[in-house]
Image 1 (tube, rainbow over the protein chains, first blue to last red):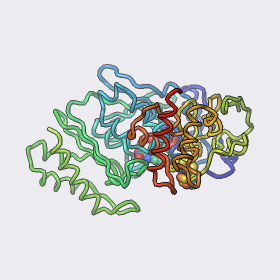
Image 2 (cartoon, rainbow over the protein chains, first blue to last red; image 1 turned 90 degrees about the vertical axis):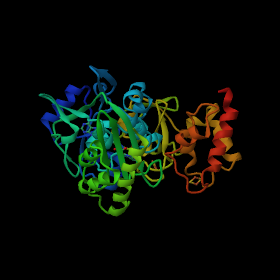
Image 3 (cartoon, helix red, strand yellow; image 1 turned 135 degrees about the vertical axis):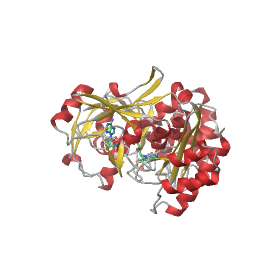
Image 4 (cartoon, rainbow over the protein chains, first blue to last red; image 1 turned 180 degrees about the horizontal axis):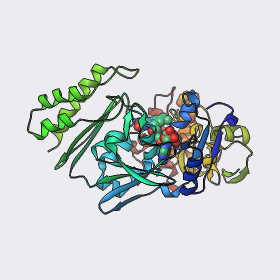
Amino acid sequence: MPANPTSLSLERPASLKAALSMLAADPALTPIAGCTDVYVGLQFGTLTERRFIDLWDLKELRGISVDRDVLRIGALTTYTAIIQSTIVQKRLPMLVAASREVGGAQIQNRGTLGGNVANASPAGDTLPVLAAANARIVLRNHKGTRTVAFDSFYTGYRKSVRQPDELIVAIEMPRIDGQQWWRKVGTRRAQAISKIMMAAVRGRDLRIAFGSVAPTVVLAAKAAAVLRGGGSIADAQAALETEIAPIDDVRSTGEYRMKVAANLLAQFWNETR
Amino acid sequence: MKLTVNGKTRTVTAHPMKRLLDVLREDCGLTGTKEGCGEGECGACTVLIDGVAVDSCIVPLAHAEGRKVITIEGATATRTGKALQDAFVVHGGAQCGICTPGMILAAARLKPGASEHDIKVALAGNLCRCTGYPAIFRSVKSALKRGRAR
Ligand SMILES: Cc1cc2nc3c(=O)[nH]c(=O)nc-3n(C[C@H](O)[C@H](O)[C@H](O)COP(=O)(O)OP(=O)(O)OC[C@H]3O[C@@H](n4cnc5c(N)ncnc54)[C@H](O)[C@@H]3O)c2cc1C
Ligand code: FES
Ligand code: FES
């Protein structure tokens, strides 16, 4: 955070409608929610945006509900709210497990699901969960609402189909038919940025997703197809190697990540049925 | 902008994106809240907003407007807070002391009789360079025992 915030501006709409008109008039505004990414970016100087719009008080973006068997989580829902929700505990335990491992309590109290999705970091912990859950992202601008399959939400490293005048209003998940599984491998449980994460569903649905192994979250469709077809774990691991491309970075090497991903796949298959 | 700090209504004239940490220290003169990392990693700047622990170095003033903020100065005026503070002294939970206010606020919401696991979860976002943690966990445990009458 620059010691002097006077170079920054903040719009504070009183309703979602007001927020969407402000964004329509001025799409250069950057939304802020729990600020756990934004303020770190300001502090480091990696975030060059100077004009912001505050979503934190927009009640329309909070809340967890089930409608026609679809779980809907408002974009502004915090990790703490997810962890405490009996609905999410029952329908999407892998999201509860992932949320428990995001930062410490202070981060869980402020960080939001919508912020994690919008921030689009390849290391975002909830992203593999949403991929494995076959989630849909609900976007809205002043003209209306559209729903995008999570699969096609990201278009590249830190890029998504969200337009500057759109807000993420909610994340929706159909009922999951199968056992849910989640693992995060990091250097230290709390606060650690992930080296690699895997979320998966095994049942009538079989979906396997990895985070931190490519510029965006990866749905390992080939590995899943091998396993669904009764193939061996070794064959599934070989298929997996063709669909992920982990890189070397400050946290880990690509080779290490590839090995861990293969191990996680085997562990998932052994621990579920 | 109006907010309640440790039970007192304050009107501060500051930028809505000023860090709550700086507002507390500079505009309210409450220097008990410490800055460690300035990026949400260490928890030294922990305060409660409406009873919820947050890192004040990554909270804009705007998000405290109209809300109740408790800092270490306010927390140690309560029975639980005082019990925690005393226990940190007795059990060697504080060495240089930079992390201590944040530790106490992060622990303030624990219920008497909380398990070691609960304590570790509550303090997972608080780093200490000095003690190596066991003394901190001991301090919190003993305070929660003594603070039972809360
Ligand atoms: C110490 C620390 C530890 C962390 N640990 C983890 C971790 O373990 N795993 C992990 O995944 N993340 C972690 N994070 C990152 C962060 O907490 C999460 O990404 C969080 O979910 C971001 O949510 P937020 O509400 O704070 O977003 P903000 O910081 O407010 O916003 C993040 C981005 O999303 C945009 N945005 C937010 N909401 C919306 C919306 N509704 N519509 C459109 N755009 C929106 C903002 O414009 C911004 O670009 C950590 C951060 C810190 C500081
Ligand atoms: S100073 Fe705020 S978390 Fe470290
Ligand atoms: S006592 Fe020095 S950082 Fe904890």
